[in-house]
Image (spheres, rainbow, N blue to C red):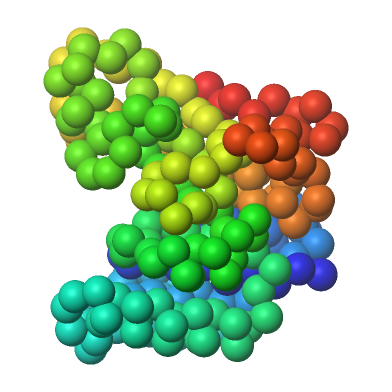
Length: 212
């Protein structure tokens, strides 16, 4: 039985999808904790209503600057490790993490990013895709490395960019696919189905890693 710790900063819709899939599909895992950097994160109430332990490490309490960021990451790491995680899942966790933190969880921390990486790292991905004339957009699940929005790609979901789309409509279509893809990717990890080969990640059973 593997322990999963999920980090959120807001309502945590991907966290909800993972919690529900874990229970419905009876994964060999449990959601050991949901942790947020914001005390008012809406997803904390959902986790608590499902009997999942929660914790808050408020980044604002640490101030600004590199030393503050390192101190926050150190405290966050301490809290996470208190739940003996086999996997750390970033589900809308809006913090840039230090190299020391990402190195500590190397090979056992996943993130989802709302673009087809390596395109459109960072913020405002849907608007940038529209402004660039992309005919498709999507989302990517990847292992976390020290470089922001990089790391070996586990799965990608593709959606069309439709005439008349704006950031909101495209974002909603992508989010629907995220809710399908992210639970699958987490399940693959806990079942030991993923093999990292350099920059590539392969499913040992040959299952498609492309969602559409």
